[in-house]
Image 1 (cartoon, helix red, strand yellow):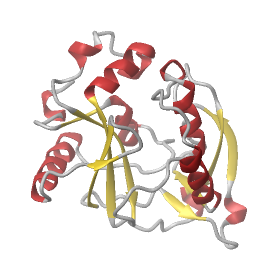
Image 2 (cartoon, rainbow, N blue to C red):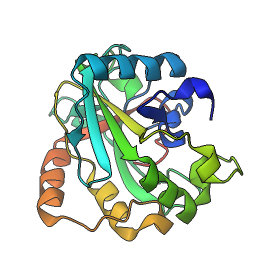
Image 3 (cartoon, rainbow, N blue to C red):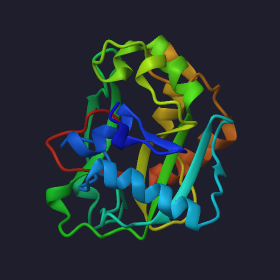
Amino acid sequence: MSALLYGDTFFLDNFAVRQWDDPNYSGTRIQYDKAEFVEKVHQLFKEQGAKLVDGYAPFCKHVFVPNFVGAKVGALAITPENRHLLRCAYTRRRPEELAVLTRWIPESAVQPVPQAQHLDIILYSRQQLLQEYAAMPSKTGGQAADPEQLLPDVPWGIISIKAQDESYETPMQPITMMRNALGREEGGSGVTLDRQAYEASTQYWQGHAAIVAGEEPSGE
């Protein structure tokens, strides 16, 4: 990994790079220099008191910062006016993963997409990422190096960025929770399903849909 893509606290993980490089990414896409992004996140994190917000598991944390990249919201509320724009297909994030039913709205059908107020920077611990890379080597982004050598000696990897209006965590998609429960060998994190969190997720995503710039998303 380039030395420019990490600082003393965070590094940009390959999983998040999709949000820059994959035009079919489902959700927030970033148009900002990667190295400058990592540097700015470090700066804002320290200015805000260097506090991490707990996530869905001990290895997951969040940092909420202003939307300094001008990213558009990654999901829209479903309304009677846009419901007819919904699309569905079975898609997968990687060739090794199972395809799952995905629902989205094409970005071209809802121009202009609103700009978000905040960025939710989602973090996984380095140790968790090493375990996931060992279970599914394709997570290294096609690099054959030993993950222990590939990942910088920095505690937290940025694995996803969500552009949103809320300054707090919004529910991950239900299918992502199920994938996590399937285990690392299937592309998940290995965290068992929390029924209460799952019900909250279905309630949220019953009324929201991700935005996709391309023809169809690369997974949920």
